[in-house]
Image 1 (cartoon, rainbow, N blue to C red):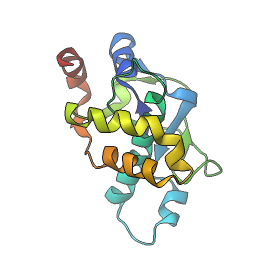
Image 2: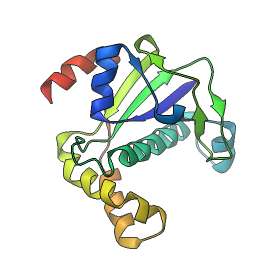
Image 3: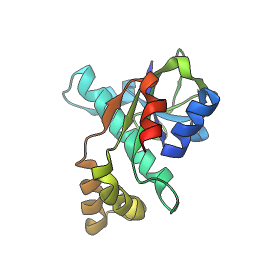
Length: 163
């Protein structure tokens, strides 16, 4: 199953250093049966993209409140044999039982430097956006207007070196 794991740049550095990714609380996002049922239309690619965007929003939560965090959303895409479905939390939420080794990492998705101001602004108001504050939702939309860049797992050390 392809699972999208919210991350920060610091977590990506840990992945390179240790060779494994430790998802916060074991939480990830995937194309689950509940997510598929929640959409009237959409092919597999569109629904997986939706799950990835859920993980990108999770990345904002990890950045929120951490002034030292690099303000770039990061998502680690992994292919794992087992993930526990958690539709009680949200349509795309899954739980992993432990760390994911680098060999299971399919790709890294990361904001470019142009997104940093918008990501910081969105991270600062992510909770207010969830509660329906229109100004916060506008700030969140500013960050989500930036497409995450795609990188192969083997590119990660070089990408981090350039940051």
